[in-house]
Image (cartoon, rainbow, N blue to C red; front, side):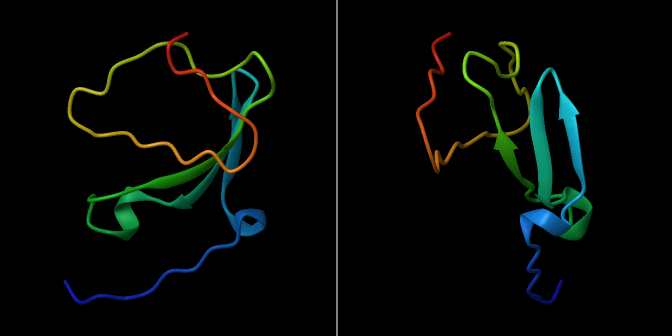
Length: 72
């Protein structure tokens, strides 16, 4: 698969809200042969996704502003 660049501003990304968290899909798996996806999450204080496990994927966090408690 040849390399191509995809640039998507968060304002142009498909966005949805689940459990009070806003997800903006910056890169979808179908746009890169299922190898990667990237989302910008806006998480209000004391909120976030419930504890869960990804059996077949790795998950990384880059905190842009504020702080996050992954221990729960």
